[in-house]
Length: 70
Image (tube, rainbow, N blue to C red; front, side):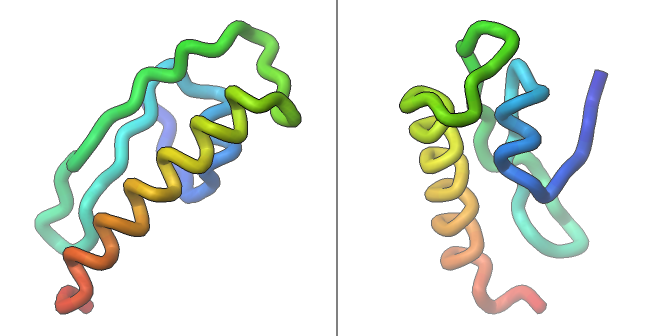
């Protein structure tokens, strides 16, 4: 099943793998991250927070390299 979201916490809560996409009309997957956390997931846990931070950092890197795309 594929689920698209802009909410990183939701992606880490529900997903087994989270893909970060580039911006723009020619968007593609720039990185994927396996989520190796047991279910149900503790959204207050350290591992959960680490996964959210790593994905957020990927998105920030992607947006800084694509800054010229509207």
